[in-house]
Image (cartoon, rainbow, N blue to C red):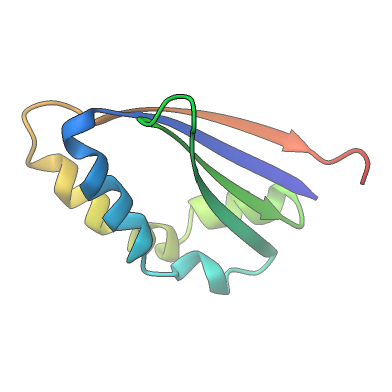
Length: 102
């Protein structure tokens, strides 16, 4: 198993839009081979911090996702929204983990 965590810091004025985009997501990832689950988490300590965590069968399955047309489909609304803004509404850091025990 392989876990990818996208940790994002969102500017306060964009938090509602950010959450709306995830709540109304395209679900394109759901049909990818090797995809197991996704969680969108909001920090209780820092309300502008979010983590999108995805669970995959393998690193290869994740790489197939990020190079797929479905990846673009799943992100196009967010990319379009951010393209029209004078400043970047969030900063993102990706962390990847191999599951070594359950």
